[in-house]
Amino acid sequence: MKQSKQLPRRVGTSMVRSLHKLAQQLNETYAKRGDAWSGGFPQEYASHNKSLFTAEDIIHINMVCKFQNDLDEQRSQKVDSPKGSFITLVAHPTPTMKYMVNDTALGLVITTTLLKRLLELATTSIRDVEHHSAKARDFSPVYTIEYCKGYRSNNFNENEPNFLRLVDLIRYMDEVDVQMLEIQVEGYQHDYELMDDASNSGNYYSRHGSNTRSALCKMLLQYPMLSDRFQEDSWGHYLRTQYKHMVTINSSIPCLSKIGKDVCVAELNLLG
Image (cartoon, rainbow, N blue to C red; front, side, top):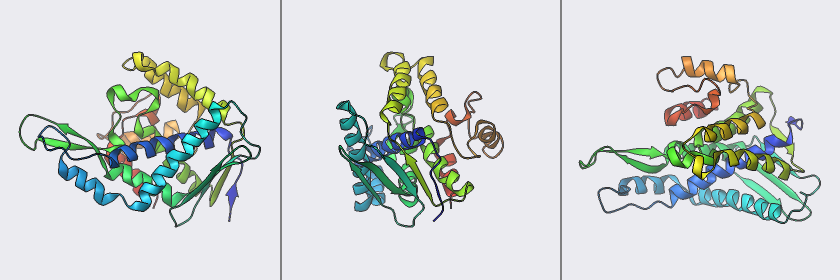
C-alpha cells in the first residue's frame, strides 16, 4: 500500500475539525422532528431524513463527535499530546473508523469510504425549510450542506469550506497516487490555539461584519487546500467555467464562495 507521511500536522488538525463540524450538523439533522403546524419543519422532510440515515451512520457520527470531545477534554487538562500521535486516512471500501485518546496514545484511523458517506449525507439530508409565503406548501428544503448561513456563519461554521476540505483530502490522495495519508499530530494543541485566535475575529457580536470573513480567511491561510483542483486560481477557474451562473465567486478566496448543494453534489460525484 502506497502511503504518504510528509503532510504537516495542521492538515490532520484541520481534517478533524472539519469532520467534526460535518458530524455535528448531521447529528442535528437526524434529530429533526416533523411539526404539525404549517410554518414548521414538514413531516415529509423528517421522514425523508429517517430513510437516509442507517444505524451504522449514527454510530459513526457519534464516534466522530466523541473523538472530538475526548480531544477537547485532553486540551482542557493543559497537557501535551502523546508522543507519536497520528491521524490516518485510508482508501478502503469499508466505511469505518477507529480511534484512541488517552494519556499515552492519540490516534484516528478513518476510511475514505466513510468520509464519502458522511459527505453524501450532507448533500441529501434536509436540515431546515425555507418558507416563501404564507401559502400552503410554498416552501423548499435547506439541505444540511446549505445550512449555517447568516448569523450562524461566525467561527467558521459555514459548511461549504469544511465540505471542500474533506473532498480535497480524497482528491489529493488520488492525485499523488497513494492509498494512505498518515499525519503526525503531536503538538496539535498549538494548531487549536491558532484556530481560537482566528475565531476570536468572528465572534458573536461581530458576526454580521467583516471580522467573520477575516476569521475565515485566516483559517484558510493557516490550512491551505492540498489538491490541484482547489488551489485558488484553479478553483476560481472551475467556478467561472464549469459552474458558471451557479455561484457568486469570492474573488479574494474562491474556496469561500457560496457553492450550494448542486455544486457539492457534482464535486462529490467526481470522486468516483
